[in-house]
Amino acid sequence: MSNRTQTGKKISFIIPCYASEGSVGLVIDEIREVVAQKPDFDYQIVAVNDCSPDNVLHVLQDIAARDPKVGVIDLAKNGGRHNALICGCHYATGDYVVFIDDDQQCPADRLWDLMDPLLNGDYDVSIARYRKKTQSGFKNFGSAVNDRVATWLLGKDPNLKFSNFSVMKKFVKDEVIKYTNPYPYLSGLMLRSTKRVVNVDMEERVRTIGVGHYSFRKSFSLWMNSFTAFSVKPLRMATGIGILWAILGVLMGLRTVIRKLLNPAIPLGYSSTMAVLLFSTGMIMFMLGLIGEYVGRIYISLNNSPQFVIRDKINLEDKKSA
Image 1 (tube, helix red, strand yellow):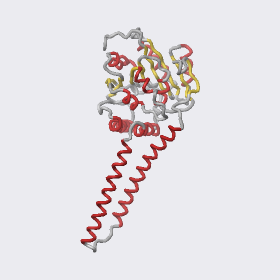
Image 2 (cartoon, rainbow, N blue to C red):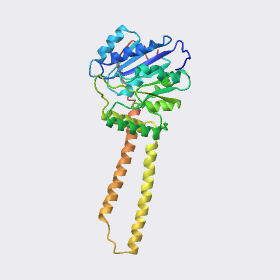
Image 3 (spheres, rainbow, N blue to C red):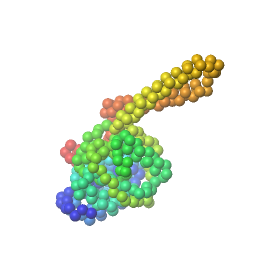
Image 4 (spheres, one colour):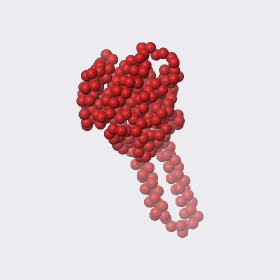
């Protein structure tokens, strides 16, 4: 670990909260204990209630009433983890910003190991890399697909892995909050801001309280954000497939004409014709759907759909004054 002193530095912890009334208080207590190991560091905790259906808000209000370093944001509607994290970023005042979940699965006791690459000045973003994820096989498959997509679309290093526990420098956070469209994808925003990103190996904890709430719908929505928000490669792929299919169509047409001229007795193939029609029609519908997804997102963005709507906040200054 680095011996370089960081006198007067401040860390902002952002916790997106959903259905975690039994665990979020324990996460905040552990953050206090870990930061206390480095008296030179000050800290701030921004807990974002993402319209949770349980009593998370009351738990956070009680904590904030006793500790002015804990700020609470109550969102008026559920927007998902990435929207909640960006909302918290708007109120983070620290030199370093840590993303940590509310379920105790993030190894908060490894905070200083995670921050060490940034304290040394070598990197701008540090992300925990779990050798084994404590989640279902279906989610592991989804994570793998999302990782491959990010590698292809965003130019991500194939060895770089994203997770729910990360820290970034203030200038990266400032770049992230410049993105105001309603479909945020934090991995893309980080990579768009800096290439100095590193993984730190550690073990993800097993969930002991509650159950996971990241549904297939939310996972698919996040995947679509990564697929359409930061790259036009899918559209170029659609163009390339269209050109290739048109060339194949011409070649197949020429082949059919030549065979018929050479052997007029060859019967017309109904089954093969239907197979080609069904496949080509399916490809056309897929391409139209892809273009429609882009157009729809552009339309919603032009209507200034908000990333988040804040109902109330505690122990936090207004964004402009902050």
